[in-house]
Image (cartoon, rainbow, N blue to C red; front, side, top):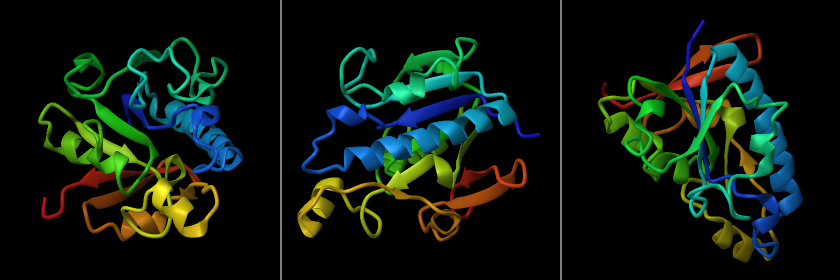
Length: 197
């Protein structure tokens, strides 16, 4: 069975702190709950030991825009898991050096790619043992790569929810190769590899 080490939760700020003119907070909260349920099982199946919270603005996870409480539920994510906040693989190196990293959060086409803990930078970091994600663990806004919540809410003149990523999003990604690894009949992850590797 595949062994992963660290789950990184990128940009899942407290749903009630989101601007209700831009975000449909009920849809966001439901998506967070679905992601947390799937993540709990992936943690168990792959023996993940660490969770890193990476919502910008939540340096110490003490303010109302920190990572949503759903991802800190002690029954789902017990105290035996090591927890920290970080924004770079060098900041809390023990969670990243020689570790296989699982990326969780939003947005698949922007933050999951571009942040310091996104797959582009992690793939360039020699000390990282591998980068993974899974469609039920990530989402994005609007139609097509690069759509932002602000753009989409203006275009449709209403608050937006998140689009759940699908296997097709991973399979058709032109930025990197995602190689599927089934864990059980319904649980899977994709390993991220540079194109032409």
